[in-house]
Image (tube, rainbow, N blue to C red; front, top):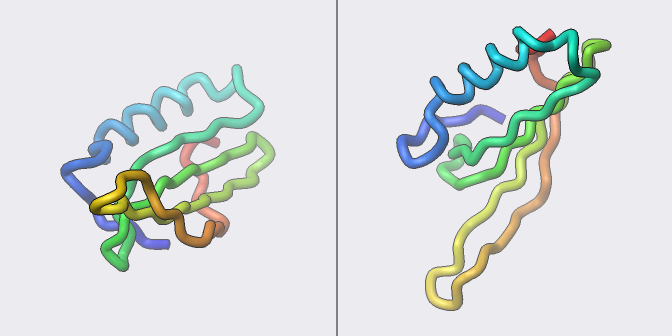
Length: 89
């Protein structure tokens, strides 16, 4: 699930700052989640949720979506998930 940066979405520096802040307070948490609107490799948009537990479990979930051009609303593709690299613990 590689991602391509997009200037129209949360800047990587913002996500990095949030992650650093969570890492600095990790003793206060059992688990954390970071949600971002991203562009994935196939050039589609997706919502990414990265879940991280203090015991070392890390999961990234992507929900690709597209916006309907004429009728409004969104069309969602198949939910995808995989393990991920820890960034808080």
